Image (cartoon, rainbow, N blue to C red; front, side, top):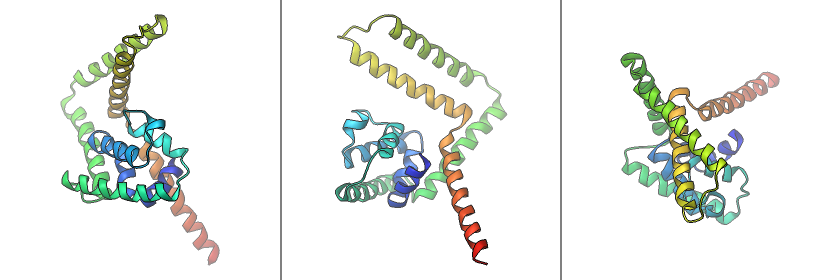
Length: 191
């Protein structure tokens, strides 16, 4: 997955950085990419960053899609500039700062409310999944139930990311470290 993001990050660095972020930047990036690359069939009507990343991992870009990706990057840059982001590095720095402040809050306040809320979310999500597996969902309510369950799953993922972090940043760091190691090995061999 890191290789896929690395490839696309060369063409659309801000969009790919946006996909790695939670909240409005990630949702906006997912929506712009879904529209620009016509990924609605792969990701559905409610694109999320994870769905778009999965769709990108199986995508073979046509020349038209490559141009659409470049156009989507420009659209995203304009919209993110309106939100106060200059470039991908600015977005990444803000994401790191946001995670650090959230963790510092936990250390300073020692409040159990977020943790209790997380456990309640997981319990409710588990109860809904159990109910959906045990009893059939009526056809008349199926769309609403599935939409609500998907939204709840997103909340659980976001809460888990708050407490446990994300592996996407680690994957990106691992790819950067591997690339720099390759350069060092190549330079050492040439000497």
